[in-house]
Length: 636
Image (tube, rainbow, N blue to C red):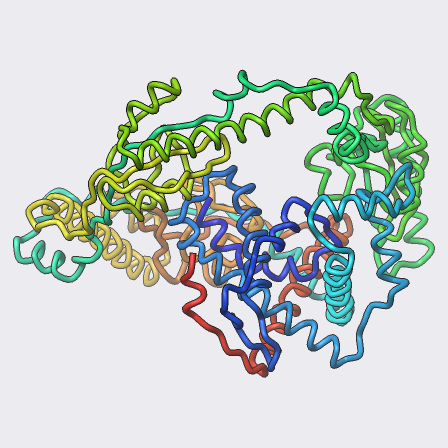
């Protein structure tokens, strides 16, 4: 997962800058708790200051997004490895540069356009219409002023306008499409010889001098981090829930405050969707051909053919792979014309053919949910649970504060734990990046533990489901283990490295023979080696059958053809080296190009637009005067 995230970080920053208007109230409110703490500058971009407050607000949002993505399993080490503070700074610098360029070009968003965009946000609507009171209530609950929200949305829309100029300047030529089609849909069948490192391990010797040399060169890689051991008392919130009571008035008050948000369910439908795209540009004859095809699909659907199967077979929307499943949508989320159609259908009803700028659509409603607000009686169990959770947390806080005072006065942790009927434990030894099993991935716990001297008591530590009272027990400093401790590990690594080198050398030697004689099978027989075959696969496949994903090349760019039937180098995957040759190939069928033309156009256009935006941002950075305080990025 972490490798994927690292690879995607750069593209995510770009995507963030061009994203549609998004309201994430759970994260907006962090600004209320951030101050500049005397520091005035994180970076200066062409004379404009990026303040610590602005940086921390965006960093907390970014951090929360990663926590949600990793389902809470985000540790301090992962944050460092992913360089999240650096990613946020890069995002904010790019954002500032784009806004500066938009201002230079005279691009802006007027009040009326901003108002129009905000009124279309579903969370601000009641019965399908914008509600100012709902809007203000939502912002208040997020501790955000209308001015701050509207400023950020205006900036986001301005960036989208700038992006639209770049996007509209990118085009795809017909020749590019045909080249992409021929390359992606070409089929290959390969011969290959596999040289696995493990086959070369026997007989490999490692000398004491080699082990010592490796140890001296890589001493830091063996370094054991500091570790601590603590004792702690847990105050789980649920433990205190049984001791709290909820009054009728509290239930009523809670309901009135949250009635329009937490207990309101907007009208919604669960949709499936088939889309036949209309090429741009296209003549009337081409549009009519697509419309006739769409009408035929509609007839099949209404005749009883499974809608998911039809979507997989015909739809040109990304949802096709899921049988056209879009999921639940609320009013206002779709294009206006499609929204009107979707919310006029009954359960299991299929729409007439609908046309939009994208193409021809067929919608099917799988389920419907009427707009409704839960009544007080229905909402009461949920309200009681929420109020109890809040009160239980408060009671747990009172308990830990009282017990901490007692411990500071000399009472043992084990005594206060026994009297509270909560658990008292001694942790195993752990580093700052490791997790205490009974606690889980709770960053404040680890931070507190590593701030303590032996016998020192930390302030109360808050976690999502409990408070912790933590006292330092013992500490081990970082150290580099003696050579004898890691000798076996080094010997194993050196033998494996030598075996991999021998496997690659053997593969290269055979490749030279094949280049001269052009007959992989004959050379394999001469050396008593086996030849494997991949079977047919397209170049668009993510990996090569029976080989996997090569480190150095993807199937799409594998340099094999009738003119060059043998790969010009040895490739590696895992612990093996490969010599690869073309057994046979099949050219893409030109007759099927028309069926994939629009999908390929969209794919290639998206790639070119992304590259254009990246180049544009890089050009702005190259011309900009950017000063950064690197020490700020190291702060936790």
